[in-house]
Image (cartoon, rainbow, N blue to C red):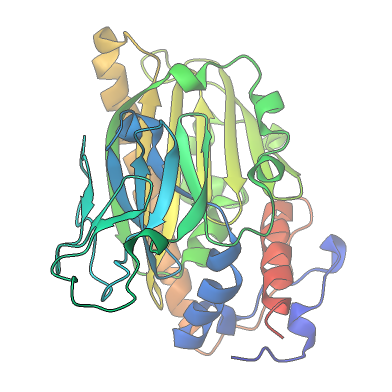
Length: 356
């Protein structure tokens, strides 16, 4: 697939910027472009560290069409192995699990060590010049950060560069000690980028989120951008049963990880393309330990988040239909309120230019 040499992919200054044209949100060509230019070179949040605490604990995942198996080795090292047997492409694991001693292909029984080395190949004694010792599963790169596990096939940057500045802004918040509480997921009839576009600006908050608008201070709603991430933040005022006073911090980390940090709560989102015009967004909730007595507050948090999410889903699906209608011509971005969208679109343009 060759990119067109047109002005749509040229860098744009914020005060003159247009949104990406509709063709980047529609159809199989757009989905293939994103797989090759974005996801094959981006760090993906795939699991929680607590899911991979002990040797043999494993999580099945996928990046840009490559099946992966995150597994903790006997040596304590976390690896992201290709979940594709070197024999005839069978799976080493079909689901998440705990405490595996070996990785055994479900197709023909070839068996690997937890570090990816082939240990045995069923009934291969008659195969001349076949060397078990030279066979091992390929690996992706992996990083553990703030209780989350990320992996990348061929990253465009070191992981430390991806999150540079985030730890300093989080300050003393003990997020590493937070405990996983609950997981939600939403399947949405929109392109994954349309969902992230919506996430990246508070411009729409007064118009479709009346409850959230009462909780945030729109006048002091600020978006800051860095090389590979952006931060939206606002003073926060809610009843004590929900979040209380403090600050709302909403991070976008390239290309598809979202971190929502409020007082005594972190919510991590992953935005995953499913098919042209469809995506899935997952929500993992984390709270400080020993907060069982705050179960009613957690329930209020889930209900409020679900309300806001459903408002966003409705609008994102309507926007996707507009993008697919043939009517839309890329509009101007608001420099004050949509600098986060502009930042995301510039990263996309930069990635797409590599395919020329």
